[in-house]
Amino acid sequence: MKTLDETRLLQFKKNLSSCVNIKSKIFYNKELILSYSPIKKKIGFITEGKANIVKTDKEGNTTIMRDLKENDIFSNLFFQNTEDEIYIISNGETKVIFIDYYNIIKNCNQNCPFHNSIVLTLFDLLIEDNKQQNEKIELLSKRTVEEKILFFLKQRMNENNIFKVTTSYKAIAEYLFVDRANLMRELKKMEEKGLIERYEKTIKINS
Amino acid sequence: MKTLDETRLLQFKKNLSSCVNIKSKIFYNKELILSYSPIKKKIGFITEGKANIVKTDKEGNTTIMRDLKENDIFSNLFFQNTEDEIYIISNGETKVIFIDYYNIIKNCNQNCPFHNSIVLTLFDLLIEDNKQQNEKIELLSKRTVEEKILFFLKQRMNENNIFKVTTSYKAIAEYLFVDRANLMRELKKMEEKGLIERYEKTIKINS
DNA sequence: TTGTAATTGTTGCAAATGCAACAATAATAT
DNA sequence: ATATTATTGTTGCATTTGCAACAATTACAA
Image (cartoon, rainbow over all chains, first blue to last red; front, side, top):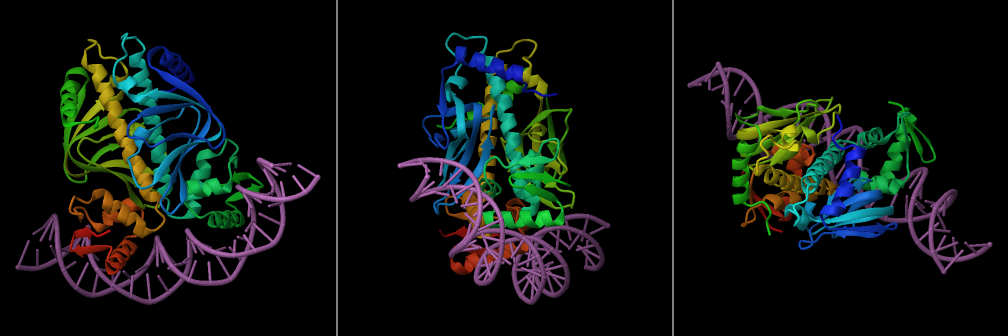
């Protein structure tokens, strides 16, 4: 049983605007959606498009911590202040709703009937996010690059075992936390072993 | 400003029992607290002690996905059904409160004044968990074993830059997703470089 | 359209890492 | 007390991986 169906999310978006203060905004490709801030605690909700949580360490290495898509939630509340810089960056045209955290935890003035259901939906959205994070940790727990690639592909392939590289191999390497050259090398090996087949940016998974 | 202080958590525990059905249970060392289940959706809350989220893949490799401590939340809702087996295992004597998920999302019968505040606290506990997961992902994004060790140690050292290995090096290696022998080797190198000092199971971090 | 930037594909090489194996020690159970 | 099991510490070796560098191709902007 799915807890977060379309109907509920639609209701959520409707209720949001009548209960708490929200701000909608459209971002174009590679724009900064949100960065760490200890003061302005915001929760974001993607209504259209995609985004990445990107980390840059002090040596300048960038890694993609997570990808976010429609109906995903994010927040600067999720990040501690570290030496690394963490940003949410749009990936193509992206529509976002921002919700003020204090608006959520304090009941709204008019004690509206929506507040409860909004918090419960946010709760379920957070659980969903948690699940995705665990998937990422599971991916990173794989011992070899080949295992990482297979796990990644199987998670994202369609019913015909096809995965299309819509971003770039560079982005995938950053997401897997592996060297791009090595990713290419392993893909070639996997093709030779018959684990996958490649036609340009389309990958078929055989196992 | 801390959102989850002692007072609030105390209040949370009190309210819980008067609003929703909970079950308290004590676990001894290395007992199974929770496993994946698509049917019985439970949320757990650790009131005393420690636990680990442990994953075993089909080859039998075990990895520690997360450690949990007092006031941490966990749930089988956080995990998808994968080939790998995921368990929550107690680490020493551990006291846990179990909350039924459906009890949370449905308002309690008597429409008690506590329900709201409980959901909000659970919401903040989830945010806290999310933060910890991001820290783990950040740890795993480190490129070398040395960087991973340093990040791990700095996160856990006390105000005197001391970290005491209370578990075992084996457990640390599993948590860092690295080979134990290599962990030992790197620790030795780091000691030679002057980055750390070791006296048995006590590590002093110099940088 | 043409120039510039980004991505893809490839390779040699050095360094990092995991694996296997073993002895020494510590912890635990009988 | 003694046996058994788990942990620690170490090493050689094969493999994997990242890094640097480059050409070829593709995408994008002026």
